[in-house]
Length: 77
Image (cartoon, rainbow, N blue to C red; front, side, top):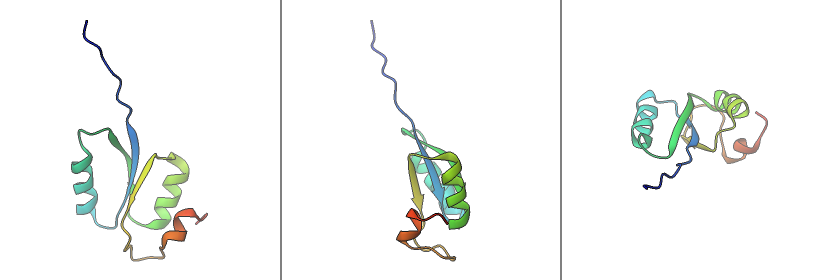
């Protein structure tokens, strides 16, 4: 009998102001154990979606045009 293993999917929130980059990240993650749950174009939207979705992982453009720094990741917005 063949053993079947369940592969855990990790939810990912993709944050980037570039639609092209968001699309590229989706392509890179396709077929892996990472599943994009949503995307955001700015840090304000990202914080809102993070609170709502509670993803396992967030990929984030570190050069977003609006307020953003590493301390923002841990802030309430």
